Image (cartoon, rainbow, N blue to C red; front, side):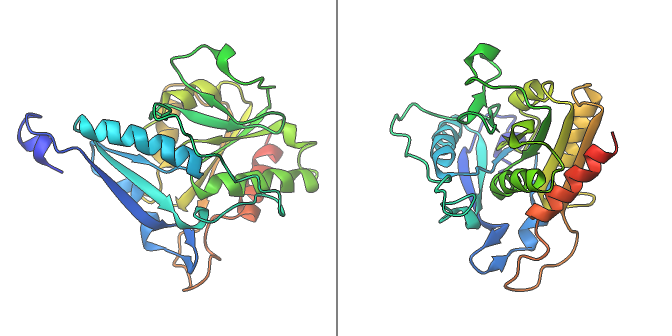
Length: 262
C-alpha cells in the first residue's frame, strides 16, 4: 500500500480490496467493522454499493482504476446479498444484470430515489436535463449500503406517521463513494431545503464517514440551513442481534426532529 508514497509515485501497486461482512448480516451484525471506514489511509478509494446492479458497474470501474495504479476497497453489506424486497413482497430490490461491459459508475456519481420515477443518477459532467423526469422534493436522506433500503422504508414510515404529507416530499440519495465528497452529491444537495445524513457506521468521533463530508460541505457553503446527522448507536452489538444498528425507527425519529426544528 505504501509503494507509491515511498517511491515518489514511480512504483504503483493498483489493487482491489473487498471488506466482507459489513453491517447487518445473516448472523446478526458486526460491530468491529463499524469503526474502521473512517480510518482508511489516504490514497485508498472506498465504495459501498446498495444493490447488485450498481456493484457490478462499480466493480468494473474499480478494475479500471486498479489497472492504472489506484487502490480501491469495496465494502460488502452482507444483508444485501439475498435481499429482494423493500416493502412486503414487492421485489423492488431485484435488479437486472448490466450486460454492457462499458457501463460503469465513477466515484463522483450518486443516485436519487424519488417516489415518482425510476432511479436517476447524477453525473457532475452532464447537464441537469439528463436526469430522469425528477420532480423536486424538498427533503433528502443521504446514505449508502444497507442504509438505502432502510431509508426507503423510513420514508414510507414518515408518511404513515403523518410527519410528511407524501413520499414525493422525500428523496433518498445513495452516495456510494465514501473517501471524499462526490461532485454529484454536492451538485444535488442544492435542490433541497432539509437534508438528513444517515450513516450506517457508529456515531461519535472517528467512527463514521459522513462527519468529515458534512464538514467539507459546510465549509463550501453547500449545505442547506436545515440539516442533520444520524448514525448507529456508539455501543457494542449483542451477538446474533441487530438491535444497535441503524434502523428505520432511528431515521424516522431523526427526520421528525429535524423538521420540527424548522
